[in-house]
Length: 492
Image (cartoon, rainbow, N blue to C red; front, side, top):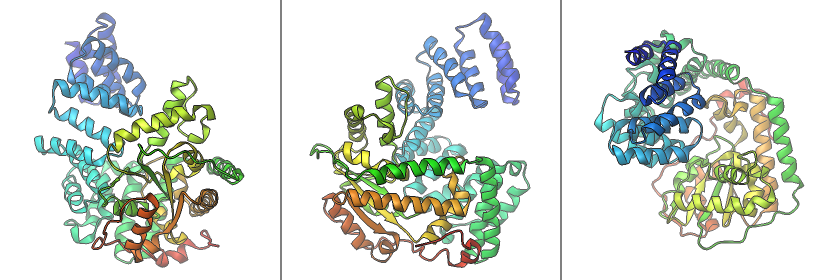
């Protein structure tokens, strides 16, 4: 009776009362796995994965072969960034119920978070096939197709979520970035409709709508209106993020000081049993993703997207040494380098079991280039540049996840970040000339074949043909906005 009441309270959105009811049940029946599972889900509703973990691990302890408990537990692991534990837990759940939609959806989330969109597509597609009304799965599937460059499939799936206001408020942004010829909806009408709903009271939602509105205005060549929308969108995001720009600049300065202070950098001994780790480094919106996509057309290249393999291997090295964990390789004590290398090798074999080259476009790794060169066998670096004004505009017009890329809401902070990144890149190129290659977005647009040839030679693999793969020409995108950008962006 009480358990049914707790479930009804959750359905009614009365989370605190439902929690109190579950706690009352568990005081008398501490091994009641269903109540423990429900209490864990309620804590997840309150965005408290630590309390949820306690409940769901106890539920799994009492009922280890319940696939629903295991799936819920995996979701908690994922929220706590314990991705490998989530994967292992879901593997057990699939042994019990291989085709359960909730388990497949959770597994798709694990793959998506691990930057494995191809594997995530298989999971989400299976969910959609079994339940065409699963809007969250359709949205997730659209996002994975977009990351893989499957624009038409992504657009169709995003449009199929527009009847739900919450998902529509998320889908309108990627749809605003899609090719106009693929759209079958009027995005401004959708924007106006969503602006009248309750969800538009949320600052993050309003920011998403403003970013999408700006993209529509830009496409219509209404640049003054687009700039007003971008300014409002970034004002909302900066309020939400509440960034400490001074602290971020100070930390960036320390990292640059370390790079400039390293007159020489040791290079890790090559390992013929490991693939080349190709780090494509440049500021956000500089064109790295396009370069990686062109490289992935080569059968010898495994695309890693913005892989967190370095951060994961670093964190594991700290943990196994019994030290407070950090994900920054630069923080790793020198005597743990071998441990890091072993962790990196193990993960690389799993991510690229047969490819001679594994790409990584994670821009944050630029500060760790020296340590990467010294500890990762066969590391190669491509430093990518783009016109400063164009890069800055595309950053300012980009909807980033909350509390990421916090410099992107102000043009002066964007300018400082780009300058810092370029100086960091020059420092590493001067110290690691044999491992480094400098390229530009503009050169890639004008002659993608020559760009790919130079990268393939840099990695020691055969050159592939990219003829017929059109690279979107976004050169000069900032020109209509230079009067608005003013003097905030300065170039040498």
